[in-house]
Amino acid sequence: MKLQKAIALTLLIPAVLFLHAKDKKPEKVPAVFGQARYVYVEAIDGQEFDPNLNPDDRIAIADVRDALDNWKRYVLTTSRSEANLVIVVRKGRAESGNVGFTPHHGQLPNGAGQPSPSGPLGSGAQVGADVGPAEDLLEVCTVNTDGKLSSPLWQHSMPDGLRAPQVMLLEQFEEAVDKAYPLQPARNAHP
Image 1 (tube, rainbow, N blue to C red):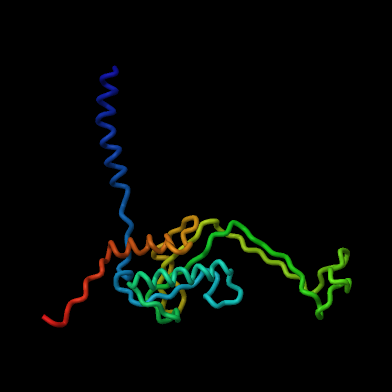
Image 2 (image 1 turned 180 degrees about the horizontal axis):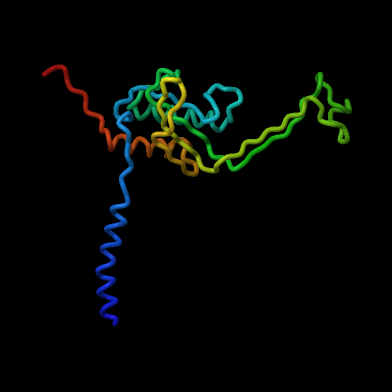
């Protein structure tokens, strides 16, 4: 009986390994990544100089732009409409919030430098929250003819993946593109 189990396992293990290897397909890298020349970087919630943009996302845009500049495969553009590719980023944040008070006409409710503990916040009340995935996100899209972004053609996320100086999510993208579409060395014009 033990011999039969050993034979069965001997035959079954290679079959399982073969099926596992067959299911694991290499990541498809769209041809547009090899043909693109111009790239634009923005955050999911807006562009770099949007005053309402989360400061962490603004830093992530700048870090990704710096890393792209070092890669030298694409040319950065300041306009989304001129880009062949749009890289969209979002810094991870489990949750954050703020509550504030802006005095009405420059006066605090009790006039003594502190808000009145029993008084309402009034028209100067400010409340905000920012909740989302804890992992950093990098997506690569194209711009449709209507000016809107396509669905992500490449998307990865990881904790601290947008942290400089390495910007690991962009490094993963670089590796995938360079492997699928190696840059050809420039030819000399002189023989």
